[in-house]
Image 1 (cartoon, helix red, strand yellow):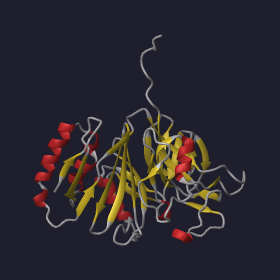
Image 2: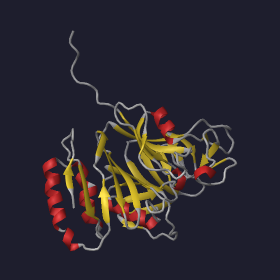
Image 3: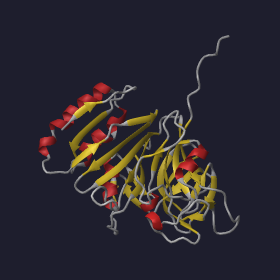
Image 4: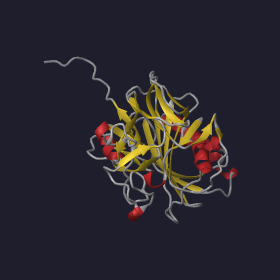
Length: 333
């Protein structure tokens, strides 16, 4: 076990360490999730108590957790890698109590056919995020593209400007632009700005933002049974019980020896470990991506390794915008 404090410009302790993950979610959650917003001294006390119990859990897989990065006040990002089985995931925790942060859902390009079946033209997530002024972005809903069959790598034919349509309900800035005949699990922001996870089919006018997935992973703190057991790259989103913190997780996969992906059940356990009370699965596979734009940076930095070898053009994204606090006090002549 190695504990190396790194240079920090905030009151939060940033660490690079190796530790053992536990079969009991609550223990590792105390480090990975709740500790993200602790002061330096409180964090050290918690780490000492946590490391004291490590000998009680022999034989579990080692994990390397990166230093926590705080690109914007209220956003914490870290990554985690394990050897057995080969696993790599990227986690962003957003403090929804920070009123300068806004959760946004954005369609890709313009609607290409008006009242026709297609809703948008595909764009790469970072391009959508740049246009919308986001500081953090992940891919959104499952989607279809005209004339395209799903494939990966050099065989992938999801390209920008292709006509596309999401498979579930979608709302952006209060405008409903997609509905579903069947209800689907959704992350929604209501008119009061409160986020929640529930099943929706045709969102009403009381929603500001809605993005949908294909399955609920966690409900009321419990992992839901899943029939599909294949491992793939994944993107998931969850909320804590108070709906004050949003958790975004992107899992790399289809990289033998490095990252084999996760099943729905495995992702559900990760979301519980990160403190989620409810969570859902967004589009995955070659679409899975997480990117961040640091303050002052001109371009986004993609954190994971998309399986196409580049970020895939998609139909919509889920992102965070940041409104810089207004300066107080009048300027003097």
